[in-house]
Image 1 (tube, helix red, strand yellow):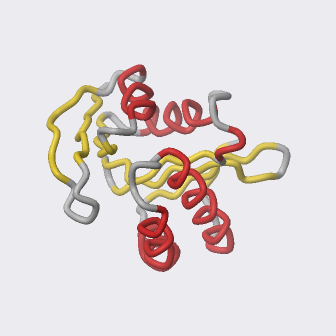
Image 2: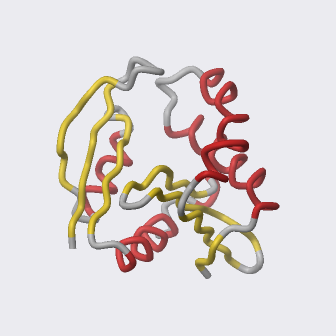
Length: 142
């Protein structure tokens, strides 16, 4: 079931974000993700226009955070990835939006490929200033 998150779930969502970020971005020091955790809990997740969770059997296993047409975050519990959960969250977002944009680290080839399979197109590649890594701006339109 996909539903809006409740404020009490934000620490759980931040934990999913942290574990998934460390796993999928091994080219960025783990300390970067850990130092960003407080901002995720206090600003980014509560500040999203839409914060959706994917719940299975009473357990939150993933989430999507959107601000307008921008997908700010899409994360699934690392132990439950590759089962279509991220695709379910994206399908939900794509039904409710006619256009979506996002940025993904270019070296996260798995994520870039995932979004390409969903029909996202590369708009540009640019330097992400906080990490010094290249990121790919992608867009999708219905």
